[in-house]
Length: 177
Image (cartoon, rainbow, N blue to C red; front, side):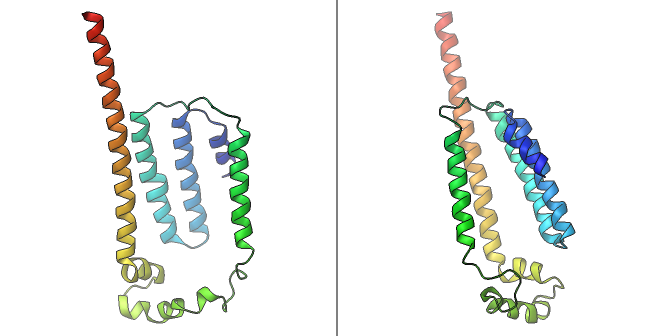
């Protein structure tokens, strides 16, 4: 996975970046299988490696495949990434220790789900019961937001392409006249 990330960072061809991103998602899905989170692995494979890669390839079809030249020094994005990463690490310092039964997240709804999920939803998998039954409308809303954003991006990109084609056609008309 580290090699794939280094490849993404060093690549200037956006097609290679999209393909490497899909490979990274697929490798992450295999890690989830090793961690016995098969449902998360299937979601990562379907959404991360599959759907996202297809959508990004569609966007590349409408745009250029080479990254634009830098307008500023690469140190500025690196500084922003380091500051953001530092803030995220700082935010984790107040979290309770990982995996303890007396952590706050294990004291509220989790015991209810573990005790009642199978008899209320008839699903032997608690994660599936939570995502599909208890939080089904929330999951549906998240999927709706993702697809709406994707459609919006495709509409905006198609307008730009259509505008570029009109400008080219007007240029040809002036050359003929």
